[in-house]
Image 1 (spheres, one colour):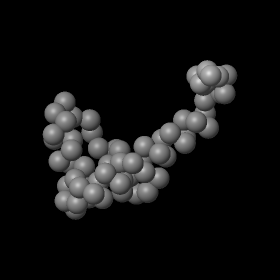
Image 2 (cartoon, rainbow, N blue to C red):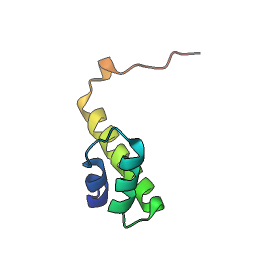
Image 3 (cartoon, rainbow, N blue to C red):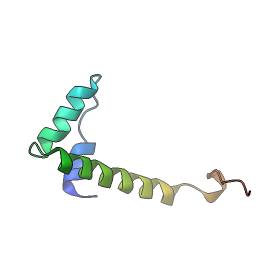
Image 4 (tube, rainbow, N blue to C red):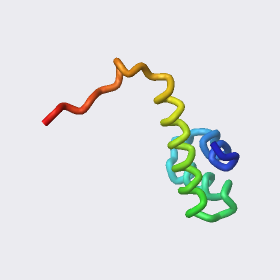
Length: 65
């Protein structure tokens, strides 16, 4: 995970979503596009980390059609 992604995903959770959004954008120097990119990278990193820890037996599989 990139440092920027870590900084954004480590932001405290706020009850007000607008405050959390503003803080994420502020963390990225005011660039909303950079903030969205950092959040996407952070989400991918978390998904990969969880996928490595979850047993295949617990993963819901798509039914054959």
